[in-house]
Length: 414
Image (cartoon, rainbow, N blue to C red):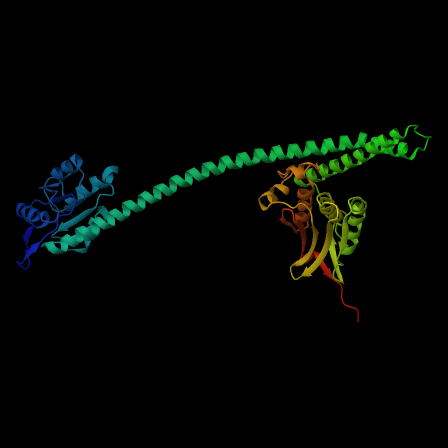
């Protein structure tokens, strides 16, 4: 479309833009100029002669931008601004005030009433075109920002609702876990009393203190009962220990001891099983002058669990090795074997309580699945960690690490 620039008289080619404008002025000539100069850019344009016509037009079809004169009959520009800002539907409607009033008071009053921008007559139509585009972009940005704020507030409400539901679920799960731990602890205590009697009388029968049993088969049965009773007592103790840890009732003793001392204590518990299984046990001495601070009985229990697993899952002729190393981060004790190993995907299962790795070779050995989880729990109570490195059919290395604050270095002899 070709238009004549009212300032320079030059011919220009205008580009139509999808924008709905309302030009409000009581001057009929200005309304004609507006249709001519602005219509070449925005074909969807209407005019109104005063505030009453303007408000009626806006109620009928809300424009994108209003170009508003201040001095008009019936309802002036200030009245139109107040009416627009009082209505929720037009509260944010962009309004460019166009007036002959150039005094500071009128400008301040117009902006206070809700004007978006201000232009003084006589109208520079080229400047007005740029101002309309600027105001339109600002309005679109504001709408986009408002939409994003609404979305964020909506997401915030969703997150708060989800968080509240999650908190309730966690509290319920925590209550259920505590109830289960208390039940396990109570049952473990109740089971140990008759089990101790079974073990005690089995030992008496095995020793034949009150005379021979008669048939040699009876002695075999008694030893089976005794071995099974001791195994069951060990399992019950593990369950009790684990339930104490889960309920926060497990406390650690604070004492100093040599790493080699707890390793020797643990080895004494598995040496016989290793000999029967035709396994070789190798121990690398701990670094000289290094001591640990912690619960000696619990640390021994950790090493017994690791060594018992290594012996259990290593075929005849295999090897179990205990190695100790010290660095700036603390002290590590590793138990390695040449056993059946664990697939990397199954390692998390091995550390999960009451879980059994899905492997026929593992399932045939039985157990509650508490050995490694209990060892991990006891190490974490010491501020340490337990990690597993394993390759199927090659072997497994389980490493427990004590933090530097639990490692004591004895001064070298002068």
